[in-house]
Picture 1 (cartoon, helix red, strand yellow):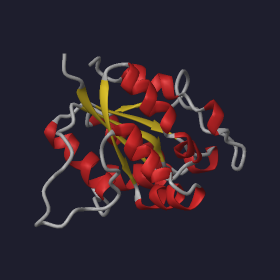
Picture 2 (picture 1 turned 90 degrees about the vertical axis):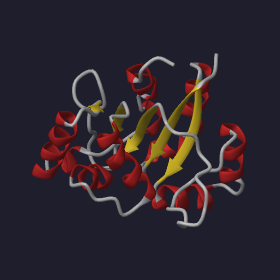
Picture 3 (picture 1 turned 135 degrees about the vertical axis):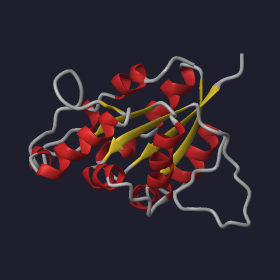
Length: 181
């Protein structure tokens, strides 16, 4: 049986520093994982650990993307069967819900809505950001559009500012919400 393709899209939030955890778990569950980073998440990966991008490329077997390709360049990633946005930052949430696609990551998830690609989002933000009225509207917009947003009781619960623990991030919950390969 051929593995189905999962795009794992990571925003710049502390759990992104452990992005190998969901990659390995998804691969174990039968997914072929392609990693796409927001530009800020890519900067974190290249500045935090020398060789991190190369290690992630080796782990996934695909190039790690963080910016749009040129029109003359071929698409090198297979078409996704599902998308997981984790961690989803508050910034990317609000841009996504507004239809802004100024980065490759946002372009892919914005387009996924129209293509009806199953999409799961696991947020990571603090309760001060969560209290902003735009956050509630954006979550509702994405849920109405068919995105599974794992926020609230039994999912990700926002933490106090500067008190988030990337070690407690519920990666398994997000992977369980994906369609089975």
